[in-house]
Length: 99
Image 1 (tube, helix red, strand yellow):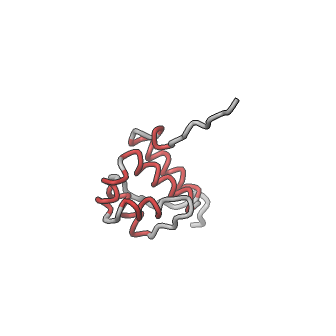
Image 2 (cartoon, rainbow, N blue to C red):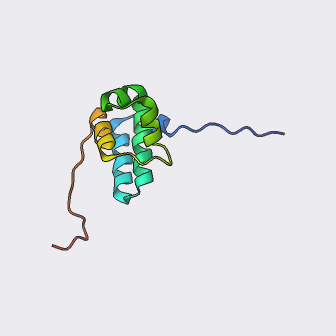
Image 3 (spheres, rainbow, N blue to C red):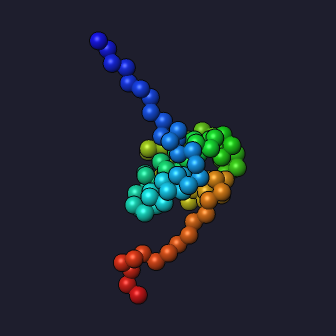
């Protein structure tokens, strides 16, 4: 008996703005660049990659590449995607930062 894998698309599980914000917050909290890019990719797919790419000022192909597992998006790309997603970055002191 052959077992066929079922395709998994994470973007199907992040349909609300709140769940998307939680995903991105978690990714940013880790400081893991690959996870952050992946989280942006999941959210962009959930909202429609073509429209997000257009609003961010990049091609759909370039956005897929930048937000892929091996991608390394420029800050300008991430800021453009965040703006297209209606998100903004906020910086707060780390809880363990010396005063």
